[in-house]
Length: 147
Length: 249
Image (cartoon, rainbow over all chains, first blue to last red; front, side, top):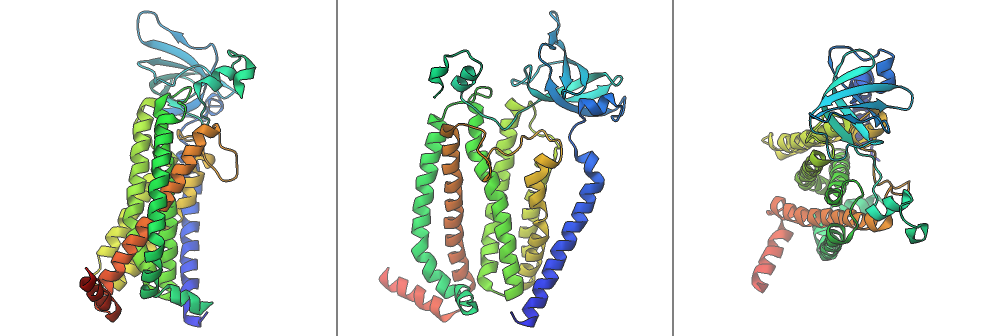
């Protein structure tokens, strides 16, 4: 490679490296702000601010969903299997909301155990399967038909 | 070896070779996209939780993959142009940018349409969605910067530098779902792991991804050829070619 081209290549590589370092440092300093939500463990430990709009994410604990018979009020427990936070919400839940499903709730903490949610978002995981397979995995179908 | 690369960079040689290659890529693209979309949209089983709305994956995932591949291709072309002054690389970068921007938009739009029923929101400022939006702005910036200069060469150089710097965003998009808590789920489709779905769901997806790549290659070849004719219109071989086609047509 002739010296001039080599020099240009070096300048470009240097530029790209500097840009990467700069962005890396920015992201590093912002890292906690980029997280979309607090985990229940962080909330219970008191890492999340009270009386401020925050997001909390985790799994809806099995058997914890309680619906009010007269209104749209619903309460459930969000867990990361380390700590639990109770969520109180009034409104329509997304289609994918169910027990054992991941959710992100937006709202204010009343204390480090209870969150009053203004919005509930369902979090989908990367697993997809046809309904028959899902049923079979839950043992509702004879296992021979799994193949 | 350098002689070969320089030959590759000659517009005339590229024009000749690409005229032989492009029908194959167009044919393959049409075939794969047809098979993939019919299979994916009509015959693949629906998801046990999302029902049919998961089928948006057959457009969303290929578009998102392409959006990032295009950016890398554009940046690599930019470096080749800056270091070796190969014109054809800049022509390719010029035609890739709008396509990449379109793919980014398709990925964002299809994601929003899917997000509404699945997550319960069109948009959320999580790391994956935000970094993808930044990529759209980077594409638009590259296109705008190229056009902002009176001389084509200055525009090309500025756009190449921006593309190169913008590549920093690519790993951020890719790993955003692993580095931070996001609403967006981790990758469905990776080269290293088994896909998290049964074969009759991921096979059409694979076909769609390949189809999108073929479409990208075919479109880039065709548009680069147009760009060659446009920029080299004063050259003798282009004039002869046009005169020749005129006589035959």
